[in-house]
Figure (cartoon, rainbow over the protein chains, first blue to last red):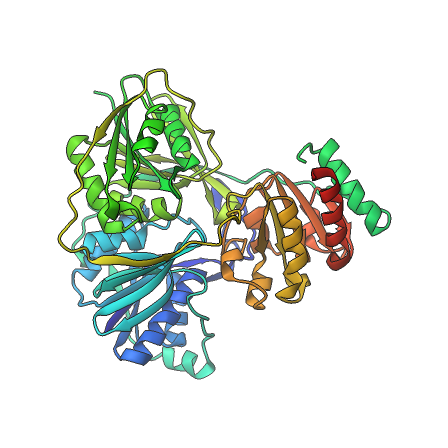
Length: 255
Length: 324
């Protein structure tokens, strides 16, 4: 089975956001694999170990994305592909077009991505890709069972659980709860260094810059208003509980 | 020629979702003179909903009513939209940023070769342009975006834009036939609805949330009692989910759900940055934590330094007194 994982590198979720000169500053920022993509990598590993095959992790992004791809190799993926978008204004439209061009040259059975990325959070790329490749998809899955070409998945739809059946090839996006992503082991990290790592330029995909041009653009950035710390209540617990309810009624007027 | 806006009005549990009216309002904010609106209603036995929806739309309501459409299926719903697009050529398609819209939106965008701006929290007009505001990093920052041209798809975050008011001239209802495709490539075999009566976490007006301090799955019981009294929902921090005290579907934060309730009660939550991203836009934040130095107190409007297992039941008691 040819398994592909769509992967993005994001800021660590413990990072604060600082805006400098109208851009989000990446000074000293720690980058990680998008947390939802970790579930996708883990699921790919579990499925490969059960059914055999090969896992290729694919990222579209700047050069530093290589770190996240190497993490996936260290977890156990077999090959990595970095499609460099340097110098190209990129939105979800662009990324899905580049990926579609890449997959046009591949033979694929199973494509898994994260449910969304924790930075821009658009949640578009994987679903767009399924349409561009004209194959079925299920987003936000919490369980996957593969039997031959038949896949049964559970999808989280705002608390409801839907069970769906699809046949491969197909695209899926991973929701929390799908599995428990492993940490890269030391031998895994050593092995990763020797695994194939391919870099592809946009031109290699036969997509012109105008074909892949972003259809949306950012015009401004801002931070949410800072919250002020409020008051710490005093007295014994019963007094504080009564005071709090009183304040919610009289001051906040919410009860 | 003006632009044509197409709003996908979502049905859930036999009713029109409020986000459908919010999407219609988004269109009336974005619209210029000469633009037109059509709404699309997809489901099973939706005749009464079509009449209800027509009150909020000037233009047409396309109603596609078929037993096979009761449950969302990406392929079937996209086929329906393709039928609609044969009748009306869209310039802008607007959906809710819900389980359905998050899935159908990008599929429509790819089909129409369109750009998409997802999870929009505010819309404004600037001359001929429309500016869309949306969160980044789950709300640690916000960006304003525009389309550079072409067909456009927008998904609207629920509870952020006021719902549309009734229109002066109700829409014409156009019923379209649904021809089920011979074979769909993905089939919904089963659906398990979440426990009825429980308030959805992302729609709750009050959220009671537990962190590592709840210590166990049982530790959530007093939080559930408090949430019941307040008709609220129970959430959790990543620490509580990772520790196995609760299901990941309850997780609030940059990974997990973003909530913006009127009252957020954080119990035994230290206030890691990734958690704050998911709740700091709440109107009033209450923190209960043993550690007076916990960062959660820095964003809380009201803080109680103390043991949640003593404080929460007392709060439940106090709320019960005033609410019953």
